[in-house]
Image (cartoon, rainbow, N blue to C red; front, side, top):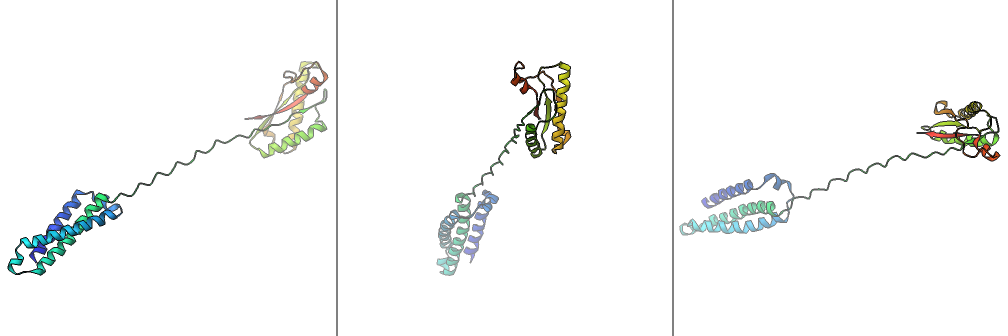
Length: 226
């Protein structure tokens, strides 16, 4: 029995040494696999041989032919060798679990696309500031668009042709802008979203030398304000 005890102690010392030399936490954390199995097999064979040799070297057979001692030494050596071999094989040959790739960063949100709103202007009869019948449908459509885009404000800009005094045309352009503002407010557009500006005859879009050009200049334009 002395051989078995002696070899068990020796195995424990070797196992402790092996554990001390390895990174215990790393070995414990990673999955056990074929490396541990191969190491256990090699360690069991080597431990059994070492145990048998140790029993023979003690002279047990010369004294009492103690087969029980020899069997115990071999089995103890095999178990100790398997334990040591499994640990060493696991630490050396079993792979660490792969580090999962970092999740991709969230996609950058697309910049908000500001909708371009196009509002048609309206024209007026000579020296008049009343909304014409053909302009009503245009302003109704403008009110609908503004109702769907309640964050948009509008500058209502009145214009005239060059006939008449400049000061009179300035006043006339302001009255035309106010008429359009009142119409849009009556169609449901909040008044605080509408500002007016009289441009007089200062910004023609066509020549004032022709009747058609002057008709184009008698207008109110609707411009969105960012």
